[in-house]
Amino acid sequence: MIPLPLQPKVIEKKDNRAIFEIAGLYPGYGVTIGNSLRRVLLSSLEGAAVTQVKIKGVQHEFSTIPGVIEDVITILLNIKQLRFKLHTEEPQQATLKVKGQKAVKGANFALPSQVDLMNQDVHVATLTAPTANLEIEILIEKGLGYEPVETRKKGKLEIGTIAVDAIFTPVRKVSYRVESMRVGERTDFDRLILELETDGTTTPEGALSQASEILVRHFSLLSEVFKEVPSLVKASVVKEKVKRTKKVQKHAEKKKKKKTK
Image 1 (cartoon, helix red, strand yellow):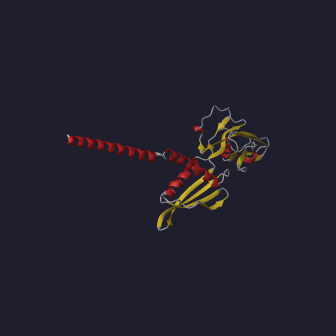
Image 2 (image 1 turned 120 degrees about the vertical axis):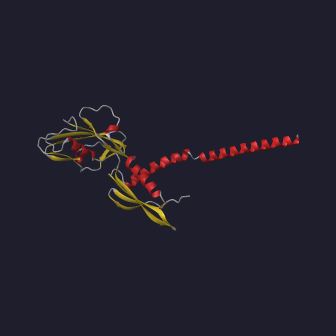
């Protein structure tokens, strides 16, 4: 039986970034596990993101706003950098209303009680005139991984509402490398080093745990479905042997009858 690796451990931790080590992996399992975890971390973890934006006086993303330095496309890109933590399954709306000469940040959004903004210092726009006015409504939803507008199935949007690509995944960066290590007399065992950074809505440990659970659930399903296959195969083999034995016995009896005649 293939031996299990040593207990995974955190070898470095700073803010939302951590480096994990899984030592004593059977040869080849470093890449197998590392690649599987990386793919799940990037594509399958749930998070919250802005999916729609409505700016007062703006009809489309190629517009400009009087008294605002940034064009609408730049404002949308800035809004997409906002990282939210949603404490409900229902979509939530947040609003921003500012006037006068000032720099607008994520902290200027009025949020419902079920929503937390993790990076409030993100720059949204710069108002340069005393008469400048900026009003924005955003829709925050839960989802998985990355979802471009083209793949989103939604009804017809209101005039002035702009759908945006959504980055739901809480993982900002994940990479891994595999090193050789000695286990007993063998020197070809694997050591997996996994580096993971999140957006602050979850910890690196939490993200790794979620990804592992997703993989375990999928493999457990396969294991449960096909668990009885070996016994079924064994039963069919036994049945076939019994059939052959009966045929041999019948053939022997026929020969015996012929001899007695």
